[in-house]
Amino acid sequence: MEYTSENIEKMLALTKEGKREFLDNLYDFLNENRLTALDYQRIKILSTAPICPRCDCEYVTKAGKSDGRQVYKCKKCGYRFRETAKSLVYYSHKYYLLVDYIKCMLEGKSLRACAREVGISLPTSFKWRHKILSAIQGLEGGINFSGITEADELLLQYSEKGRKFKSLEEKEQAMNTVHPNVAVLVMTDREGNLLLKHTGENRVQNTQIKAELKRRVSEKNLICFKPNEEFQQAVKESPSKKVLVKSPTEKILVRRKTKGLAVYSVNVVEKKITNFLIWMMRFRGVATKYLQNYLMWFVVMNKYLKDEVESDIGRLLNLSSHDRWAWERYFRLIKLKY
Image 1 (cartoon, rainbow, N blue to C red):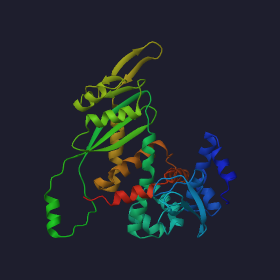
Image 2 (cartoon, rainbow, N blue to C red):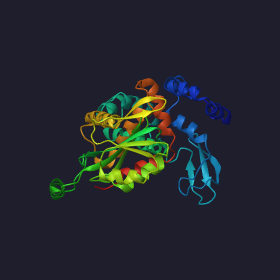
Image 3 (cartoon, helix red, strand yellow):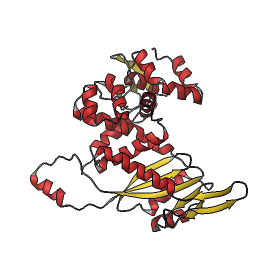
Image 4 (tube, one colour):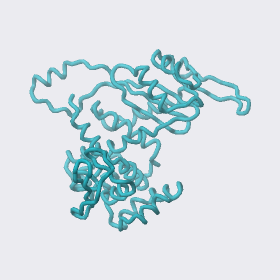
């Protein structure tokens, strides 16, 4: 397949239904044309103007090709980079196996099972999982809510799963350290929009709740929440309508002129939390520093995927190819110290 501007424009000009059909059949399309995740990443990159990964400058020029990939040079800082620099496939020598790896991920297989089936090492399997999950983090900024919106918090235990200790003393010190709970803000509406965000330690703070409400809801929303002091303070300053639900099982009936009775509760957000906890059991615990990756994975599964493996492969590949700085986000994550 040639990466001409005409082909890319045709893809971008597809209708909403056309794009859905294209993504549903993307896995078969890649196999039939012997295309890899790198090829699709190039299509996504070429659909927008190139940007220098060092200084974010848009004033770049073409500077030849290397291994069949376009090379650019930044006019501002002189940095030379390939078209897929800092993207999902950056530093992936076996990128041609990445689509098969995504398939194993969607089938719910463990890191070892994915590595064994695809033909990569266990450390590479771990890196690829978190590269893909880091790539979809950029979708968080586009999450907004409409209509009745429910908010709650989830408290999880702190974890350092997988940590390697330099000495026995360091291990003993870590084992004897008592860590506070990890706080997660959970918001959802009746349209299927969902947000799970790791906010820090102990409890979700009202300043954090206010910041998310300001970004994601409007005065047309109606917010349902429990009698939590932090939530009450945050929601009080919001221009949206508010409904205080005194207990999880309570349902508040409000009469409307045209639609009869409507039920306002926190049942939907409670169900999302329960589903998330059940889903997380398959991983047997995750390290806290990687928690946001798994939170976003659950959000993407609920919002963007169809629970059909073959059609979801193309959808997840497309979502993870959107972020041209995916590798940068992944690199910052693995460098975090406990």
